[in-house]
Figure 1 (cartoon, one colour):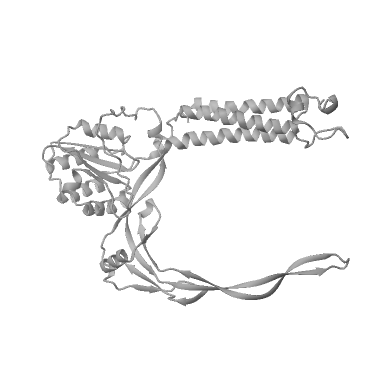
Figure 2 (cartoon, helix red, strand yellow):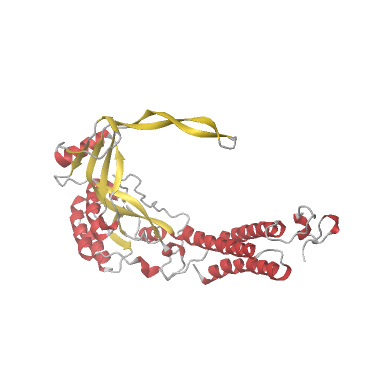
Length: 409
């Protein structure tokens, strides 16, 4: 966050701290722990708004690539649990007083079903942890057929409360090397998106035709082929390539075909996507012939610009179809390096304008309420005997209690 943003949030937090100190030191209208509590509340709110202002603007997501490594069939089984039964009974203690206590009178069994279901496990390499997905029976059978010809490995997990059903689980291990590509969203902090800097992009014209970012909502079929690229390149082949490059090179490849649009469309697209996510490498091209582009442009965050130059040359010299994928994979494997995102940690993020007004409103409301309560409660205050309960408005308006008696010194 910028110095201005931090100064505002924490500077505002100092005002109620000073007010509380005045009430504590001069008029003794609050006790020491109430003053500390007011200080803590002010600082806590400053920290919360500081975090919200930073996170709300910098929070972003990137796409990781991986592949299914196994699938598991979990058959139905039933668990039985013994539960104690109790009832209340009355008893009289040695002094003749009656009490009630809980007494165990027996037990009964409760039964819990574990429904049949199927899962698969996907590996994303060292870049992410293994992820388990729920799948249906048809997809499980397909995976099992391609992984191991339907020959499943039997395992027996520990089920201490097993009663009936099938104790086993049945696992399809990948013995053939068949690839089921997968994707997943992962959060990261994107200061480039939120901070005006030399990495900023020109505003996108309102009438510009840009593609939405491929969110890859289906973990088993991405949407990283955009525009005319989807018409000439098999999506499965592209995802298989990404499932190999992703875990090794920490890269997310996207291909965008702009058709007959000029090369300026790629630069507008780059601005719309704010240069792409942390691990994106976006291959853009266009021309009258969908398979033989007349221009190319590659953007993404990498310190080795040579990979982008080489990819642009590969796109120009080869047909845009499945035959180009091995060339792209070889080039990315050889020359791509993901940019160290901590290089952008110096970028300062300015809080949005709305956060200042909301912070003022919430801070004033919370502090007025707290100090009103602190001045009107009885904790630790020296109230004359027989004066009755204190009226909170006495301290706020003039300091006189019922009968005209002054309640603070």
